[in-house]
Length: 337
Image (cartoon, rainbow, N blue to C red):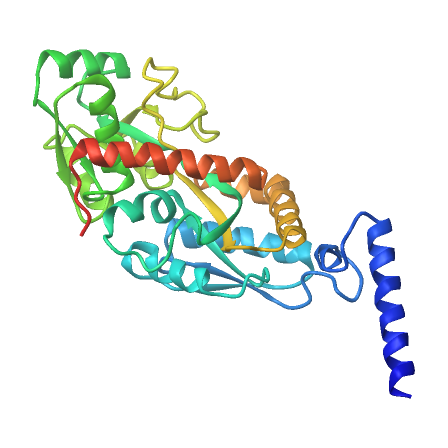
């Protein structure tokens, strides 16, 4: 009887494998499809946001997670695991099973900047994850205080070159995206500007608005309120394309400094070695969510542009940003702690 059961089990497995192969799938890859007993997902998905609740990352993550949950037919549960500049939540996801049920809302800060600022990260920010896709670009913007006469980046650079050390720029601290943006501009143009670090970018605005600091490099979602209020004036964004929220503001490339492009993205990562079929399914749902009119409108209103992209393209972008930022960090003399 036992041998008969074994033979029937083997026959069923062969039949299942043949059926999957005829559809261009392995028996395992069928779990990535949207229907059937092995479909993914069959239970709620956890999306780890490595920052505290209430910030821009949290707002973006919750909005995207809600829409993805609707499309998956399974809840996407948000879990905030803040600490160490995003390293706490990132480490948690890197150590999770690679089954598609634990995802990370990543960013250029956690993936491409953090490794250069911390001597011993407990995970590999590149090899320790599977890159799924970009969620949004939140352009980093250069904004000057309203009384400065500069109406363009070219005018600012001309003044800076003629008056070394006269201009200063604020940022959210050493190693922040804002700091690296200023260092990148300095390295590619040779201008001499003074860096004034703050604990947060919000803390820089009183000095920028009063004129004690010439300008600030900040993400658009954080800067947009001051820009709309006329307290600071945007000159250019460091992103590869103009922001949908400020289409009149040129990119640095359009302003004549194409080398000063720094991609500030939020993305979706999973633990390393995510099964290809599951990766394809999550990528499909993420990009469908980002193309939905209601979510697009909500994200653009925050100053974060939805940016559907394939996992392969995202993986290339991540590695390029990692290498580019490494050069900027080295040129700026920033030492990991």
